[in-house]
Image (cartoon, rainbow, N blue to C red; front, side, top):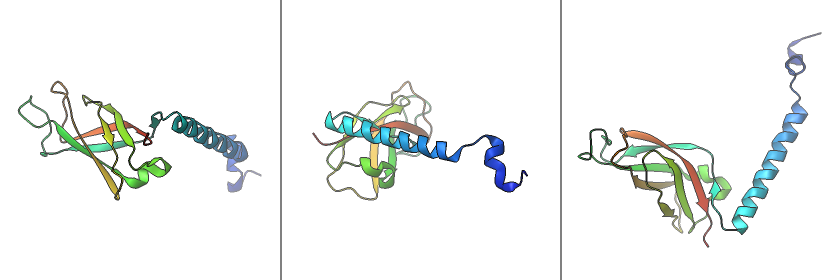
Length: 138
């Protein structure tokens, strides 16, 4: 009775219910994005990216070393939320500044963002950043 084809029933997984839940979540996300676009509000994006120290060492031993980092975000990571001429910001940068970056009108395969971290923060040659939010051009 319990052959290899019955794994879902044995584990209590309902594929239809999971598919319906995924569709409901996608529909709710689209509605949220549409509402935020109408209000010209920030739209959060999922994911984290690696930011590399510009001079290669990072900020480890005080203010004598560089505190500038660059993060490269592929165009594909934006998906439908890429708004040429719009704005982007990172809200989860350890010791980073809360700068708003203007997106160029012509966007290539990768977008580069540069930022400084605070002197009290400790960052090596690579730090992780997240909390990317985008906003359409007003």
